[in-house]
Image (cartoon, rainbow, N blue to C red; front, side, top):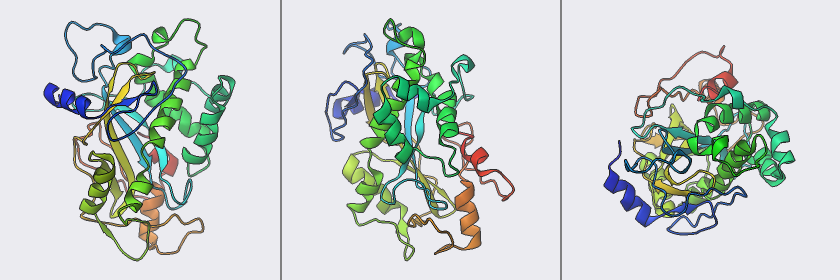
Length: 316
C-alpha cells in the first residue's frame, strides 16, 4: 500500500473537487447534481483510519483511480487534435486489479437512454464525440466500462445516493464524472505546448513526452504502447470522500510507462495505409496492449489478426 505520508503530502499540494472547488495546478472543477453527505472530514482513499467506518464516504478497497485515454489512429476515433476517453478505473490500493464487475444486478443497458432521461444530455453529446468505439459500438463500449468498473465504486452504491434518486442515477453520476475529469486532462494540448504533435516523420523520446505532461500538469503519467506505437495514457488519483462530489487527488503514476525509449505518435488517419507498414497497422488496429491482473505486471502482447479487436479492447 502506498505510504500514508505520501497521500497527505499529495493532498496538500493539489486537489480536484467535484463540487466546483478549484485548487492546485490542475484547476479542475467537477460538477455533479447528486451530492453526498460526506463533508470535509472524509478521508482520502488508500489512507483509511481505523476509526472511520462510513463506506459511502471512503472508496475502498479499490481506492487507486485511473483516468485512461486512447490515441487511436487506425481506424481513427474522435477529433484529430484530441485523445479520447477509455474509462475511469479503480484498482486496489496496492496496485493489483481484482476481478472485473462487482454487481451484475446493475449491469445497465442503453446508457445513452439513461443519460438522456436523467438530464445528462450534455454529457451524452460529449461522449458521442470523445468516448467512442472504433468499430462504432459506442453503446456496447459504455456499458462495458460501467459494468466492469463503475459498479465497483463503493461510494456509488445506490444506498449511498440521496433519497429519492432514480434507478441508474449512480451510473449517470459516473459518466458525468468521467467526462468532467477528462475535460481537465487535455493530453494533446499539453504535448503540443512542448512541440510534441502527431507526425509520420519522426519519433519522440518517452522522457520528452513524460516531461511534457509533467511540466503542464505537475504529475507523472503512465504511457502505454503497442511496440513503438503509442496508444494510451493513464492518469492516477486518490479520491477524498465520495466519487459523487469528492476531491480527486492527483498522484504520480506508481509504475513506469510500458513503452520503448523512442515512441511513434502518428496522426489520426481516416483512410488507412499512409505512413504504416502492414505489421504496424495490425498492431494498431488490434490494440495489442494487454493488462495482466496486476497493474505492476508486465505487458503481454497477443498476436494474431484473427482476434476480434473489440474483444481485445473491452477486456479491461
